[in-house]
Length: 346
Image 1 (cartoon, rainbow, N blue to C red):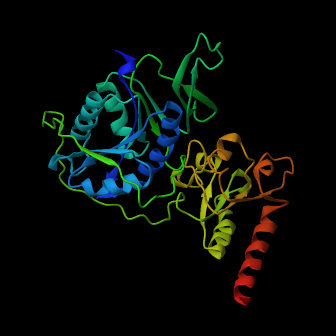
Image 2: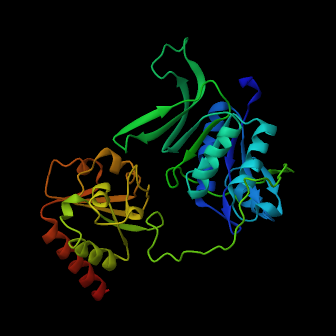
Image 3: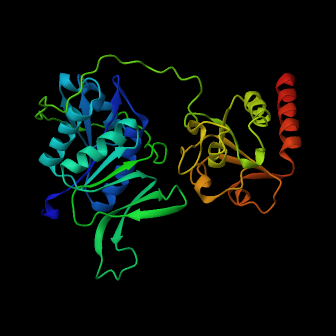
């Protein structure tokens, strides 16, 4: 393998039912940063059936080029045809970096494709940057312009930075909500390349008999503008009622820390943190949450952070914009009543 042949940053532009996933736009934003360091450009790979019109939206968010793989076999996601399409693009255009969202689709597609193109893949990354590898080596002895992929390891108890210095492309799946979308530019245009890959049915194909769409009963915490998040300090699953009352008064959504999920008090899809979801609400209440680094990494980009904790030395106060030291069982209901009264007077 000649590493010099591989150039450019490619992102997988995931779409379902003709709608681009949010992470597809986030990856372009991060791709632009990486491409600037490497003095190259960003190409979004759009796979599906009759999806060419989505290329303009990818351009608005920063894609310099859009490769469209359009085939009726690609209408609904299936591992084999999508893997054939993306692996074909990689083998044809030889990108230096390939980024895929760590969604249900991306977690399936990324490893499959990386195996086919004979490279490694770092899963569920929370940070990406260009640097040298090994990290602490003398620059003269290190390989430069490597993709440094950071992800939680050992259940979130440590952070690992991984590189792929000897193979190309360097591939990563990236956790949704971690990277920031660029502001759209309605005047931006991208080169559109139509790639006719070899999408051939084989014994790895599955037949889709039916598609049943799940109707979510709760708001995705990644979309919430106000989050009222509780930790172990809330004390019990029943005590989350006072947090739910506060969230209702504010028009917000309840979320939680990993300890709450581990105790079985709340479901995993409400967890904030490195092993949960990364959120950026306008207001984030951290109630009974100590502020472990794994949790803070998932919410520190919130616009306003309000911490309530009886321990005045809790690390959460180091990242909070406002902090209240005291008993949450007294403070939260009082705050809820004050908000209700203010709304009634308005």
